[in-house]
Image (tube, rainbow, N blue to C red; front, side):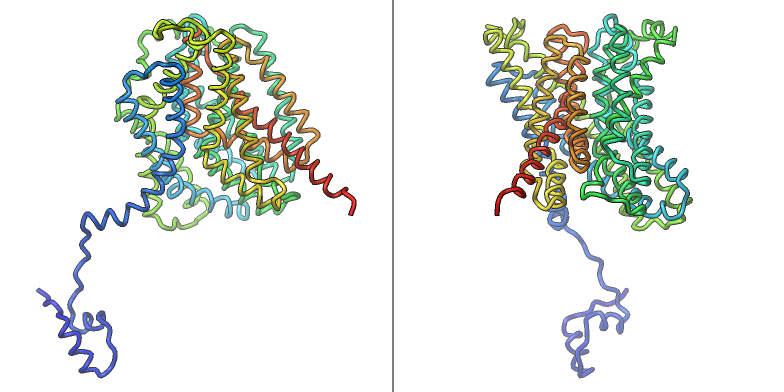
Amino acid sequence: MPKKIRYGDYLGAVRHKQRSISYSEVVAHTHVSPRKAQLRAVDVYRLLGPYMGIRFIEQLAAVIPLVAFLLAFQYLVMQHGIGAWESIAVGILMVIIGLMFFMEGVKRGLMPFSENIGHTMPERFPMSAILGVAFTLGLMATFAEPAIGALKMAGSLLNREEVPYLHLLLNQRSDLLVLAVGVGVGLAVVLGMLRFIYGWRLKSVIIMTLVPCLSLTLFLALDPRLEPLLGLAWDTGGITTGPVTVPLVLALGIGVSAATTRADNPLSGFGIVTLASLFPPIAVMLLGLALTLDSDALVIVQQTAQTEPPWYAITPFSDILAALRAILPLTLFLWIVQHWWLKEHVKEGKIIAYGIVVAVLGMALFNIGLSYGLAPLGQAAGSTVPAAFAEFANIEDSPLFPYWVGIAVAFGFAALLGFGATMAEPALSAMAITVQNLTDGAFRKNALTYAVAAGVGIGTALGVLKVIFAIPIVMLLMPAYLVALALTMVSSEEYVNLAWDSAGVTTGPVTVPLVLALGLGLGEAVGASEGFGILAMASVGPIISVLATGLWVRWQIKSSLTLPG
């Protein structure tokens, strides 16, 4: 057994050598191995505390304001408590912890692959290979979006007799629905890559995409069987632009853009997220048309509707399996592209493996928290809103306000919810700082932030009115997108890029499930056939508000340049 080195031996060695000697030299000379470091529990806390604490606080700051607002509205305005608050509180905590792990896992495990592929592939492979990887990445990233799970549980509140095709898509055909959304995102990424490669203007691409999209919307609106699908179809555009798809696709797009060196304005890097929010509605609407050709579709619904488990019949084991199915195929695809195709060595493999494990754990915890925390909270808030203007069995003295005052309360609640949720999105703050720097302060951070938040708030409120008054979604979507299209035509290219991408950063993994659950709960309370469409209106709102703000900024700049002296 090696002897221990005492401090006296160290001093003696220094005197004997008559020169300075390090402790490690003494260890090497006497052939004694240094003792392994032993970490105490307090040492582990001191090392991991700051690392985890910062990330926990980030997610806490994004979740708690929304939860506090909903609770305050319930207790102070609606004078109605929330049942099973203990399980909801635990669910909210699991959402926060799950998002903390998931976001860190994406950053450490998935982003390094996408960044390296984006910078390396354009130099080595033909365009067809680049587009193939882009399509597959967009498709598989959609499956890994944490908010995509909210779609599968949304169908539990639907009446099968009133909206059979919508019920079919969200229950027996939910996997096919997610696949259609993924295909839409994949095609959007391909078009985005082509735009970068050939230097196409986003304004032209938006017009080419929006015209068939709106035409298909009008076509489905004329069919009473398919009209209920429109709210869901347009909502999927907001669901897909989340914390997985956006950074992975942008990393690939930035690499391709840098390789082609085509940039005609400081905001030319924006725009790819826009396409990822327009193509999924097209894909879902086409899927709905395909279902009308399936003569066995409604028979399948009638045979299996009673055997489907309710959305809350969920176990942690099933959530872990769902997280593995979402994360591991995407990771395997990225690894195969880098290791076998690009012949690039995977650097820092242990850190990447740690990121993948943390991402899977985070997604599983988030899904559990979504089922027991966010969804019941949003549904409870939405189901009590009608008591502000109509009789509600569970709330005494309802309606709480005169009819139109109650409608105004519901409108204000939705507007504040959308505004507050947007202001809490960390991606919006980062985007606003980037825009301010790229425009040399012409488009200030606060101007963009408030423009986006105001657009989301007004859009959310209009979506709530759509559910309350059973307004066909096409009556709101068509005018809104026609206004956005008109503003696009008269706006400069850089502000078009910015405005259409701003809708993507407002729909995070917390906002989407809350708004979906709120809309469905509200729809059930007022007797609406479905409660979709709020997210769709919350997405088009910031496009209009940012384009209008951009025109105002451009007018101010032009006015300052024409002043005398």
